[in-house]
Image (cartoon, rainbow, N blue to C red; front, side, top):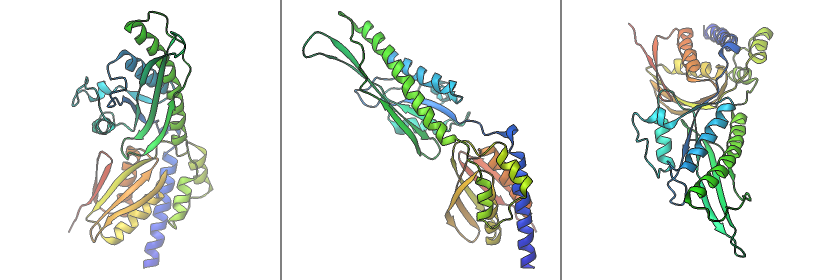
Length: 319
């Protein structure tokens, strides 16, 4: 009987992997991550939020990433319901908390930048040159993982005209900062492209690693020849409540065979509860469908709840 059960589980696992591979074709291609561009101005020497230089830089960063195919959202538009739109001198901890608090739409990546602008007079003449430095970095909103950083500094900028007042200074420095912001945005999007680049063969290796039967040649072609596993590597917390140790073991095998699976790590385990840190390139919608299909294949009545980056699977006990 144990051999029959093991064989049946392998067949079900292979069927589930095959079904998910066939469904996840070009019609369900992984979308690019949702991005929000935010400025960190806690340093008193940086250009504050609301300054016209700041506005030109954030507009250029957002537009460049938008043209590269990313879904870029305006911070004020998506967070004004629970945050102060005009708040200045904010630290990165506040920016990350605001990004995580946005539920509609769920944000995946926050692009944080700073602006340092000044003007220095030559020691040998009356020539005054503006100086602009813009560092930027990418963070995974859910996990806090650093996805890349880039900085443009040390560029020789043209000198300011004689008698350049504050209005002239803001316009000249703003124009130069906009150009530099375009370079920063191009570098950051290139780094993000590398992170979300499709990877092939993930589902085959996962199935082989669990000892499950790998689908036949037709299934492999469907999985590898269509849309590969692209998208932002995302981490989820998967909690299982009320399941037996045998069901937890079976569920772990299923989750390791899901399409676009990266790896998982047990966080805690007990007689009737288990928790996993689960990393995948699937989005939350696909992972939720996979978990519901998993319970159906296991013949385990249960419910799947999702909030933030946490999936909770609860076993529904029956007589």
